[in-house]
Image 1 (cartoon, rainbow over the protein chains, first blue to last red):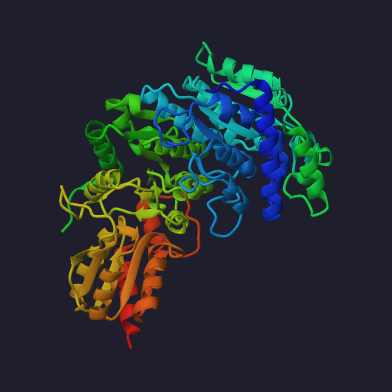
Image 2 (cartoon, rainbow over the protein chains, first blue to last red):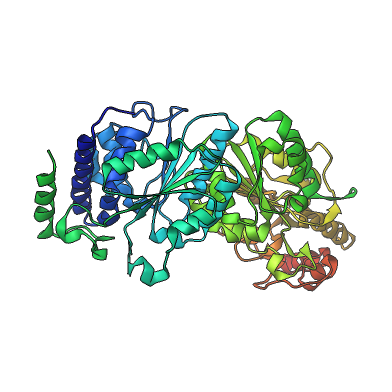
Length: 277
Length: 314
């Protein structure tokens, strides 16, 4: 927990976005769109909500974060670096041969990365295991798992959702980054997810719906989810904009999995620098 | 030569029940088959560290991964087809890649599953598990070795796949036998042929060796209960003496023990090799013994392979 103000957390979110643009541009690949939709939540998690210690990544009472939508590794790495897990200068090595910053997160390679992810639909199960171990060991840590919305098409998520409720994992918080775009475009045109809140409710979860770019709502939702007074796990469905922060990237599925071109790059950087205090 | 007929899974259950007392880190998971895999023996004595995931193998492996990342020694069990096929990629990403301490222990492997038919007869599980980096693959030869191997893998820190059969079959080792991961055992010395077996086929290898003796063929029999990492030294030493080799497994000859031995021989010492196993085919329903005959998995099939292998010696 920290004393950052809402304005400071918003500012950090935009710094994370700038890192994402720089890292993916340097790598000439990667997934900026979903990294930017998740940036406000990542700022809230790493600079306000999660109990963690960058100097002691293995602290046994730390809160755990699992990035199920592993392709947005850039924003996770940016948050970890800005938190002090490793030097910010390392970020530029993303996706380069020999780098610890693999295209998708790898447990054991990067301090602060809890689980290996990248193949979609698996993070929530892993988070269930971590939360279950916490219950068994009488620990008070929280386990937070961020999922993509397109990822909800993977059936394993629903196996995990049923399991979490069955086992009373109220120490587990899922976050769905509802930016409505997957690689091929609109999630509802691929295999529709709506009514998404009802699906989670039917699985027995507390459902909190917020604007994922409103820092006050994000902080309040995390607090509510962590104070769950019943045995239910909680899910925060955050409505977001893919590519948030750069005008020509917003709501553009094309930026799901490609970096800015040499022409686009200075414009994106300029727009984000404008936002950063 | 052989002892009483025992099911490996019963001894897996016994070992787990002991581990419940011996090792507070052990957590056991099952996917609605605890009564069949015998993880129920653990559940009875240690319900607080037993996790039922329902019919959801992919989720089971993901949860196992999270538990292991939190310091648990996890045993996750179901039938071989489901334990390795249904959740192969979950094992790849969540267990093998991060080298987590998860033991995937499958029962009901091989064609001797019998009446349930091909959907339930794992004949490819060794192949798909062996292909994963960081994965250790074990197929104990009888119930006693299954017990010892269960204890051994609980002490070993890392991913393991262990396969067992469904049926009762004769024990060939002594109760209380020690198990060392990666160490083959010569069960019978001979000079004419090396027969390398795993799982319940080791019993058939010994039976074959007896039959061959009557015909003046002196066979060496090796129990290769760890298929990966393969004890190459044991194979090389033996075939340098015998000059030819036969493998026997209740599994496809594609990717299993036979393939592992072929890889070892082709890179080290050039001797004839014949492989006994299923030959690029699915199984079917039937009585276990009848299926073993129909699919060429008996001591007589091993004898025929031995004669062929010997006849090909330079």
